Image (cartoon, rainbow, N blue to C red; front, side, top):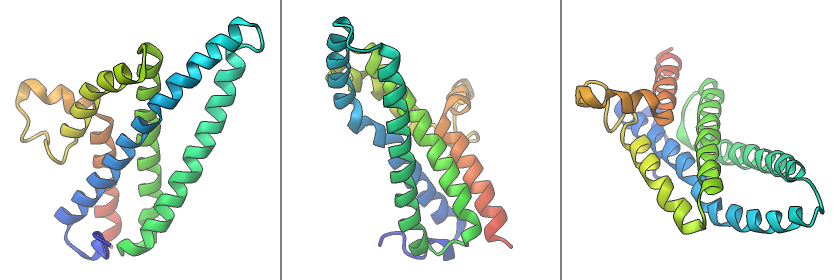
Length: 176
C-alpha cells in the first residue's frame, strides 16, 4: 500500500522504493541462519555415522533452497508489481536484479554460517557486511557523497551494483 503507483511518481521516490526492495532481499537470508546451523550439526553427526556423503547433503540443500528461493521471490515480485504502476517492461529487470542480490547475500550468509560456531556468532559476523553493503549502496551513500578513501566500499557492494542497474533500466523504460 505504501508504494501504490510509485511508477507514476518522480525518479527520486522510485529509487527509494528500489532501495527498499533490495534491502528486503539483502536481509531475507538472515532468518535462515539458525536453521542452517542446526541442520549442519545434524548433518555432521549423520555423515560421521556414514549414513550419506556430505556432498549429497550439499547438493540436495542447494537444489531445494534455490528452487524455494526462486519460487518465493517470483511470487513476491509478481504480487507486488501490479500495485506499483511501473510498465511491465521493467518487471524482468526488477526480478533479475533483486533475485541476483538475494543469491549473493544468501551465499554470504551461508558462508558465515559455515564458519561460525553457533547461530548467534553467525549473525554477529554478518552485521559488518550487511551494514557496509546497505550503507554504501549508491543511494544513501553515492560516489559523489562518499569520502574518496571509502569509494572501494561502493565498488564491492552488491547492493550498489543492483541499484545502479535497476535505476538505469527504470530511467530507460519509464522515459519511453
